[in-house]
Length: 115
Length: 115
Image (tube, rainbow over all chains, first blue to last red; front, top):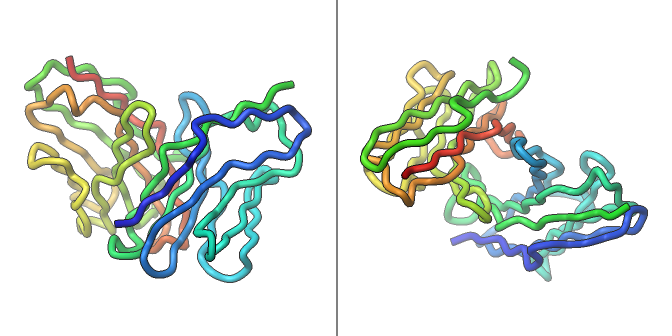
């Protein structure tokens, strides 16, 4: 079965500093990888995806993520954090035996950016 | 409307009652998904429709859970004889196409509390 691990429950970073939110995955075959963000009392919003091609993908709000097949990772990054980036971030994967119609989410990582 | 709409926003049910949760997807979106999000966890897949066809219901936790999308637009998730373990946020998402090259658009969810 496919799975996603987000090893950090919370990441704290000062505004203006770079941020990284970690994600590793397990799936047989080629993965489709996604990051979603959830603001308080709001639905999940799509940030970016990796399907194929360039390992570095760029998404909304200045976020990017790098697909690393050998390390089975898809870490989310941003060069300079904003206080408004504070939210709950979810990594997700599809593929393998569950097929590409089913997304498996990680538990989420709370990002807190301090002024 | 501009986004995925779910109703009611909150639902409190006594154990043993039946509940019905509604999802209005973005107009023209082919695919519709239901997810269950327990407190402190990531969303877990319940079921998937492409137009009116329910293509995958492998995530429904028991035969008390039933979903339909009879005209390929609005969907209803029904839970019969609710139990306390059914307490969660139920998320609906839609996408324009029938593949995961198309990102999911989530509603704000229905928070179900079973007392």
